Each structure stands twice: as C-alpha cells, then as structure tokens.
Amino acid sequence: MSIAVKALREAGTEVALCTGAYQGCAAFVRSARDAGWPVPISNVSFVGSDAMLALLVAHGREKGRDYTRALVNSQVVPSYDDASLPGVAEYRALMEKHAPQVPAAIRDTAYAQQKYSFISLEGYVNARVIVEALRRAGAQSGRPGLRQALESLRGLDLGIGAPLTFTAERHQGLDNVYFTRVDGDRWVPIADWSAAIKA
View 1 (cartoon, one colour):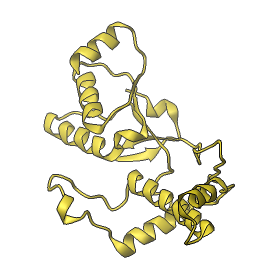
View 2: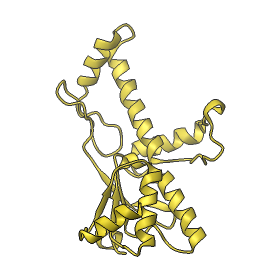
View 3: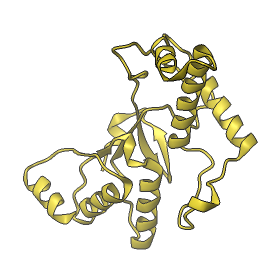
C-alpha cells in the first residue's frame, strides 16, 4: 500500500476514506502510519471493523507503536455495548443465552470468535426484520407475499433508536450511520470529533 499512500500524501490528501475488506484496509493504515502520515483514515462498516482492529492492534504490539490513532469507522447499527437500547439489551441477552458457535465444518482456527460484534448485532436486526415480515406474510404466502410483507413495514421499532421503514420504492430500511473510534482495543461511539481525528 506504500505506493497508494505516497500518491495520496503527495496530492495533499487531508483525510483518507477506505472501502474494502479488513486485510486491505489494515494494510493501508499500517503503510500510512509507517510512512509517518497521521491523517484521519475512515472505513465504512463493510470493512469488518473488529477484524481490522485486531490486525492493527497485533501489529502495533509487535512494532511497539499505535496504529489506531485517528481511525474512524462508520457502522450501520449502534454500539453493541449500548444496553440502554432495548434491542441491544435483547441481542446481548440472546447471545448470552445461546452462545452461538461457528459450525465446525467452516471454522477457521485463526479466527477468534467474539462474544458481541457489530456484525452479529446487524445480523440480529436483519433476523428481526425477516421474522416480522414472515409473521405478517403468513405461512403460505410464498415469495411475492414475503416481499409485500417486507414492503409494508412502516416505523417498525426494533429497539435500536431508529424505526425501520420499507416501501415498494424503498428497500433500505434504516438510514442511521454511527461513527466509532478506537479507545484501547475497542470501537466506541464518537462523542468528540476533535479527539477522534487527532493524530
């Protein structure tokens, strides 16, 4: 990634926005910080925030430096630590109760499963939406009935502080974006932007 970092730095880039999988984005962050380039670097939720952070923290420990300063990630769900939200509290309780595991047939020994994550919270929210649509559609509805039920969801309260709405013309149910920064080895909501982007 050093070629990309050099080109962006020479162009006077003030903020780098990354879109990609966690390995590539982590490599970009490492290259930028190794080059002494302290600009804020932002990733979208698709990156796999926790997996990227684990790589950067491990690399930082190995090198004796912090690769997580001025790192901002967007999320499409609120923090999985915000148990003041009823939907998050329910998600956490269900994760505790069922302790889901990766099936042995697809388990990767290099993967450390997390108790809670943005990914599993998003999956929980998606499951709640599908369950509600199936409930409304009825057992015999088929694909057209399921679609119609999904498109009938208006103001559905999932307990995450943002009501979900679909229509025949609108298939993005939620519009909220949550910004996070690293504090220690964890993603936390951004309350102070000046501190979040400080190198």
